[in-house]
Length: 545
Image 1 (cartoon, one colour):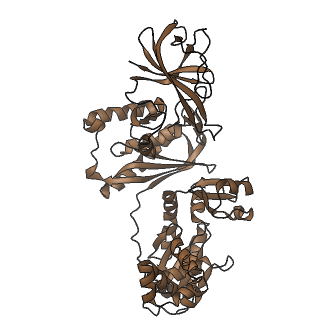
Image 2: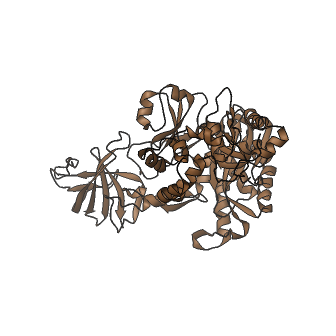
Image 3: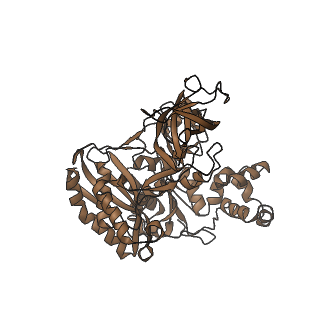
């Protein structure tokens, strides 16, 4: 055993968790275990489970092709925040056996092999201790030990399932790496260039003089050259274990009433807020994990306009428990005539204050924090904290969706251009960028003063008192002549009109496609309207007051 490499860099022990992004999704309860599953990134498969690979799914496939090979494939989108969040307890468990862990990325970490080998007696024993710590968590892991971080990572990736530890003897890392393809560098552009130049393996790259590599490939090529020679210049920098900020409340036996849970959670919420205060922090975004005795989990992130207090935390947990089914916001799509909003369901069904399944654990973790002294955000740009306190009291009494504030949205319909978000919550991700898009076909400014929350059924008739018909290309058999502004309203003459403006969107999606027309009319009562026609029926979208 050589405690240091010939270049003087301490040997590295790398622990690798295969398919970690998919494992993290399973740990988060988003993907069932032992099913064909794939992680999607930019519309392509980036990680797939062993069951999916057995069915012919490989990395780089498009979603439809992967589903054609494996119809039962469960797909989930990539989430770097989830990967890091679920990896944190894994690293904490490794640190109980091997202190001084550096996280290279979620699913991959490194330790200086020298200290661990001295403690456990050999490098093999140190690697075995790391694997045992992973197995206690029920996770599959591989470990590699070599003269550099890069070489140790490649050793871990090439460790066999029956022998999950691969130790490369001191001074042998260059020979171990020589036969590996240049794609192992993890630099696609550089690897593509090297292959075109005839350098297929790391050994052929390592044979080049460093001066030639620097002059041809620059600093990036010189770093790759050093790694190919087993002399990765990266040093292992152990992390400073973070102060635990999350808190968990365990109930044994489980509680099945919301009021009981809220009462029992209060000390944990106070401890959670106090722990943040001691660190000089304020929680502005809270993540709540709820687990029942059947193993079902509910997870949600809550925002706050200022920062959370203990009472605010308890309120959010209560609202999450009570939300047996909430209407999913159709942000960016508007109110479609005759369509029903989808509903998102949680595992708990409430009857009054009773839950169908007893809750056994509630875990509170801060998603976003800020310095305590800097939290002074005020309502409407500047203001009275009493007003904010009153709004939060209304939320506490009436529910999370009782106090809403508007944020700019994006879309062609007026109802899509303004979203109502619960007070304290941020606008959905991407809303600001969506609002800035050009949206051809949208009504130009000035916009109507009155926009109906729900489309108002009206009638628009021609001279023969027949419903107005618009051809596929916007042609009219007869102009609009009569208008009924609502059920039971009298008939009004159409004095002037403009249109039709055709609304054709998402024709490739059978569920979301739209084929409609819009008119602006002025009736005999001198009221101006914006009308929407679809499927032979007409609705009033807004009125110009």
